[in-house]
Image 1 (cartoon, one colour):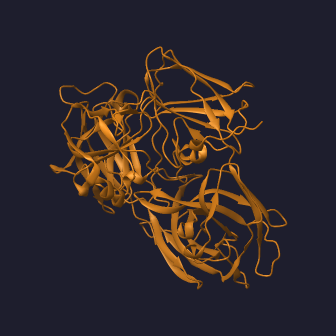
Image 2 (cartoon, one colour):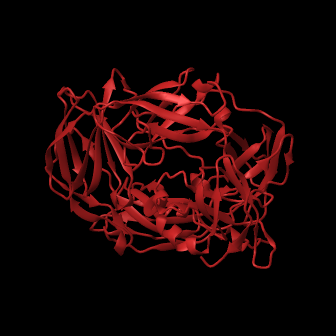
Image 3 (tube, rainbow, N blue to C red):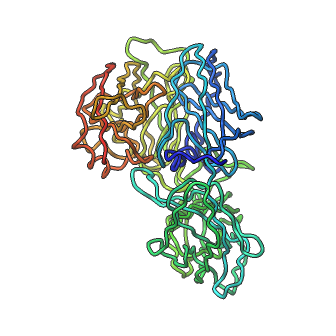
Length: 559
């Protein structure tokens, strides 16, 4: 007899798919520096079982992934024939746990509602955490056909299932999964969590440096049931394990364009390298690469209407330069050819300075393990960041691409309990305003002061009757609205551990709001409109440097 799926499983999903994933930058962009120091070890153990939510049977070969950003721990275990898994030799710390298998919905430990983050596991020295179990629901399936304007099957068409989610503080259409049609135009999308989605299709016939085709007819990205405008598209709703068949899309014909031009470096010499084209309009995020001709010229054919980022990567030998000159342009294609595009390289800026150890400490012997990061204030397609390590005496020299960026550190390993206290340039604190790196302009004298005097907040949450609540989300944000922007250090989010206690670690000293809600969609805590809406029911508090504060909250519902 099949088991009834508990109601709380209806939305367990989205964040499990995206947690702890680091996007890979194209070759030639500054990659995040790798931490090669050994991860800490201990004797704690986490074990449990994974079952099929529809019938309670054990699931074998489920990938159970454990991750701790602070401890650099990243472990993977597979369940056996009884659905059991075990992860041993863990150091004390806070961990995230994810279970995933094929067409089942991936889950984070502790997820109880749609599109929310999982809960952390607080692990103590030599502790055995048993019965950390998962019940995986079957993902939804969507099948159908893609045809052209006269009903003939469209083979090798790209089909995407998309949903709106919060990215950099605002709701944007994002692709969840893609598939490709077979020779008779059929596609199958599987493993979708419950929710509302859009289905779209396109044929990617873009080519670089091929002879231009006489026939410029093609197809624009088309949404179900047959529109190029997402505002006119039909939204579909999927439930747990639901199969939705016969979602057929007839592609919309359009006129394809050609982009042509030249790419030169900052000295006016032809760029010997790779051309990258990225499209992010209409909900699609796709990238195409190809060689630039020896004379620096290029042409890109079969480009459908949309907004694109075009970028040239300088190649030295067979490997892209680790910090290339920037040669980039933003283009809008509207069906007509775009000729005489000129990409001109801009040299990266040089940034030099020193790291100031925490007060009362001499220069630590492990300072060379510190990783500096330069995070763009406004992320754009194909834009690399920057970063590097510090020398033993605390000095550093970095290369950074033009634009405004924040200076940050990677708080892992020996620096897990270290944060930036201030970043100063010419005596001015630029920690939260960022630095405007101009082309061909070096920046020197940058001071990065560290601190181990972390301000931490923790507490429990009760309901209107005073009963302890075990499942909730706490949003913490500065009272100063100017500190609500993307990448702000003054926005924090916490979920309770297995004992029902929340923790917010490393808060910069400031005046804050805190509110406990029964549900917060992942990423909503970075949306200024959402913060404005909830602040009237939030609790005000202030925290100073090095303070450990306890703040118990009352659960707020109906938000």
